[in-house]
Length: 360
Image 1 (cartoon, rainbow, N blue to C red):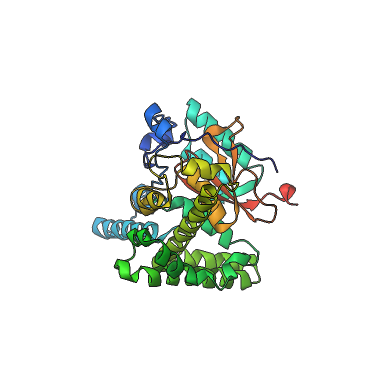
Image 2: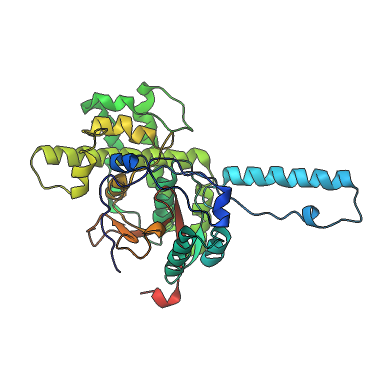
């Protein structure tokens, strides 16, 4: 497997990804301002998944029903479609090149780059699943891929000390009480230990349950159900964010003690907005799921938190050495690998179904 290179620090845009009608005509999205690129703004997720549902009444004349009845059916279908989109976190799979043709129809330079990128990815994967973009996008795509794999739960998840971590850290670092619970949760700071402990326990339980399923089909069905249960799904993200904070604290302490640390952690704490783990929490992790997603340097932290190698096909970087970027750059050989697709470093989708000719 070829490996990409580590992106240069501060080279990622900071606006939320928005769906643009012009995109379907192949219009290129505007490039980030130089100042935003230097500052390495938030790489937020955006755009809701779109599901194409064709209503026959929109295109054909029905000779057996009156106009009012047809109109009511159209309204019902529209309502049901809206409900489905609201609940759906990871859309059903579709052929990867069909998806590309639907999304990138024009002949602009941007559209051509995307098409070539998708053609390259289609040599490895036959299908794609679109991920809901609500500022949890990177966490959702990574966790969905990791938990749906046919493998035992990672050893660190079975550590009995895992659920003791919230109380241990919060008693040592009082500033963690500034933790901002996710959008789907309500609670006060005094509930924080219990809330995060519950989230870590749920992560362990669900991951173990998926791993026990014998067939890939059963595992996928169960994973799909998990990622349509908002209460449980968003609880998992709280657990992963806390694991990211824990790893950040470990890396920062090692750096302060003069120990060797991964290069990304040097960049992580070189930012004006995250000179230490407290600032990282207040200015970055607290924003995930609310006003922003993960920056590229935080993708490394995510990889370290769940101890999975995250490889991303960055389609906008097609024909460059950054087309396939790996987080971390030199991962431990025993880490499982998850693969994502990013069109603009702001939104992540998941490729599925490895081509037979690429199987080991």
